[in-house]
Image 1 (tube, one colour):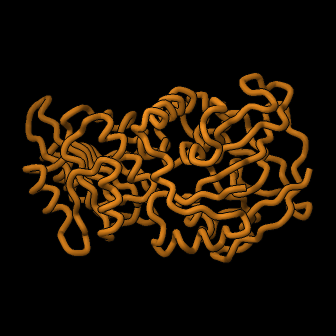
Image 2 (cartoon, one colour; image 1 turned 120 degrees about the vertical axis):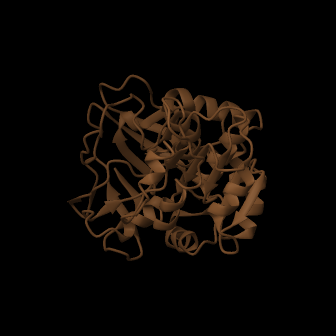
Image 3 (cartoon, one colour; image 1 turned 90 degrees about the vertical axis):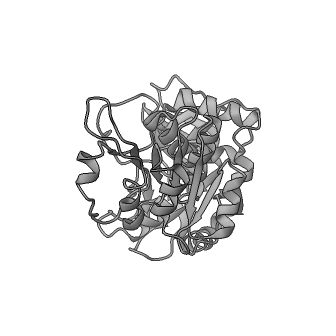
Length: 349
């Protein structure tokens, strides 16, 4: 079958919206007709990444309806509403093997095993999670990346508890999800750090209690003052060198002794260059620095996130502030890259 999709053909260039050819699914594959897809900052990194094979398909969070299934697929059927995500629904050890989906563009194999910037997607059944039809087909798409990444880091990686102090660097879609989860878990204080006062004000609607504009204030000093010595947990939802280096000194120090541990810094945003960290922060303060890569159990946690959305605890609709058509994908990317999008932008098909 033929379908329209956004395709990355050249490094750093605008995407091409054109027809792709989707074959019949293999036994372990599913075809989904999408209603919506999130526009994630990770795709901007991919567009500019020189070592990715082209043509490359983009996007990794979407909601749609199953139209075709492979012979060995049994957790969904045709007509089911599903979320497409990039985290396998069956927990794995290590990195899953990457295989080409079989989609072609002008008879050339297309790279990228998960994509959602297209009307119809073909992918392995591990990246398709069924949801109840009662949930809206637009705002739920961001559960597949923004929510699972930010909320999962707080819920499953850090395991934040009531009364823990939290600081989040970067209040885009992922950072807001982390803030909202920290609020649900009754953390306090919840400090939002960004470079834009309007984005910081927006973060208040998701549970942030304190705000630091890093353009005007040295953020580490501000966090140490607000928390009286350092946060229990610091999250980097951006992934740039500066914030990579700021989260560890933002958490409290411990000292000598078996259980005298310091705080934990959690890197969520995908880093793009090397960083330098004072090793004494680890040893003398017994602090921890770790990564969080989609730390979610999709089948269990998606149901939880959606129930909280239904109860008004996790406002997905409020987080989505701009909507685009597939034909406007380059406009969406440019707006995201220039900092014009609060929360998350989505594509609607």
